[in-house]
Image (cartoon, rainbow, N blue to C red; front, side):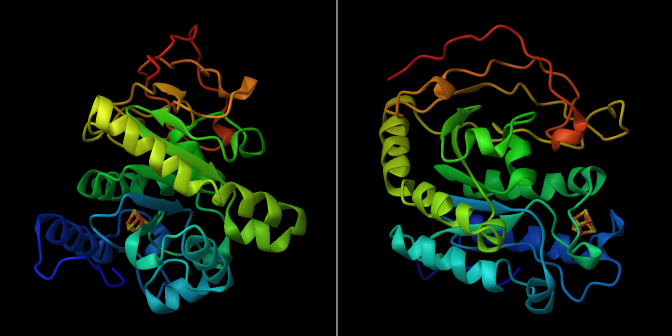
Length: 278
Ligand code: SF4
């Protein structure tokens, strides 16, 4: 991994776990993405982070350094984190794909699925209070079938954990109008964390592996492995702004359909079940 850092002076179990996952990532040949890369980019940050950010895949700079978000979009991300009161040393940053796709193309669904277990183990090890998804590929992991233009900046509870979907910093850098949207969404992070803390104090920690796990189930029609552990319950974060889009989007049946981008189609939606509000 790029450096795994932590607040205290002694290594602990989380640190060891993350280092082990990083070693496995460096040796992984489970999909073709490793071919032609210089470095794997497992992720880096504070093993005890309250906030975990999940991007899409390494780019050229990240491949060169073996660290996530170190190019122009990484600088932009760092600025927004600092402005929100979260220096990089306090958060953990990872991607849904750990090796750079050739030509900076998007990672393919089967590549994301192949890499999914690494990310899930990182989430389980860190057990963050809030997950921030950056871009549509990481968003799709938690909100399959949704459009980022519809749900950006709206925190929801996904299987017991607060997830805040945001635009990818690279997209915002290239489209001026998105920049202000992303900055505005990012500025809500402190209040989202505070609300998540209050929720945790009331209902407790998110269960381990509470979030979708891909790749361990049977293949769907597109040939992408699904999950045997997924029941994607999605609900609003208490004290969230009241707006129509904050209503429950429903609960999908536990089925093998993976949390993939829109090309995977719309997941099956059953009638919404209201989750208890605090
Ligand atoms: S992208 Fe993920 S699954 Fe593919 S080779 Fe790299 S670590 Fe393995």
